[in-house]
Image (cartoon, rainbow, N blue to C red; front, top):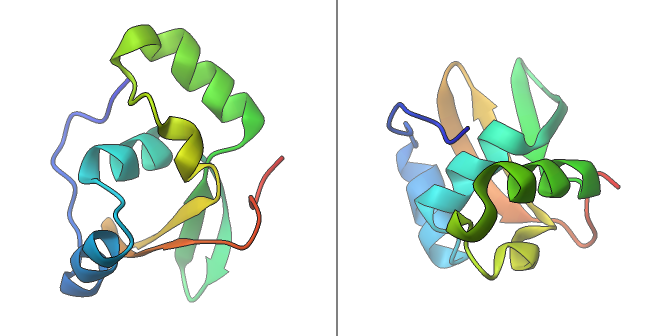
Length: 95
């Protein structure tokens, strides 16, 4: 299911998302479908795994962005209900 509430991005996250060409709908999909792990200081890091991509494709079908695989190594850090930053890892965080 796609996130219903608008994303709250910090100014830093908005800047990084634009700089790294990660659109807000993709950030929402990563938060909704991605797996998470602790990122320290109360933050969570979210990223897409093979299983979460499979679930995303099952649920959204043709409505997902055609280039979603491009974001396989993207991750989102969130804390206190806000997206703190968006980045790409050198390799996917989850398998």
